[in-house]
Image (tube, rainbow, N blue to C red):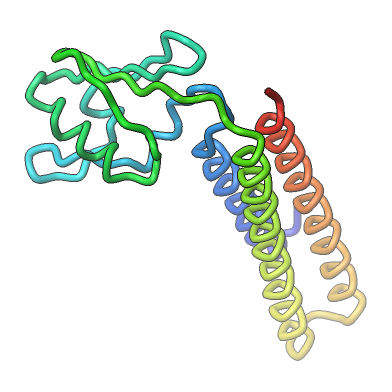
Length: 183
């Protein structure tokens, strides 16, 4: 790949990676440990991911279990989960914390599907903005050392990259929407 295109390809890849991480945090009826990725626990004054203060497992389809390595951390983990936007009340038996995910209602599924679509649209806008930045940079090259034919070729290749990533985003959106709407 042309070195001038590589930086835009990398930026578009990062957009896709960000979207995938975002989608991993959306719960779709099943317990997914990634919903805890953004939650931080106060671990001796340092905001720390839950996965670094305990063992996170999924013993059943709709239950996440957190076994803290230090029993004193149970209260902090519970507090972090309660203050997050997860919307689930943790329960503990003194040694482990359990998060029971209720079955999603049809209304909630549709709401989540809309959210998935919005995130996909935002990612497409980001990809298109990267394309625009690339085209602007190529036009500046035209004033110096590159022929118009080369500029056209670079713009066409960048458009093909953009189309590829937009198609990838659509695929991710379809997959996540199906996952959410499946009862």
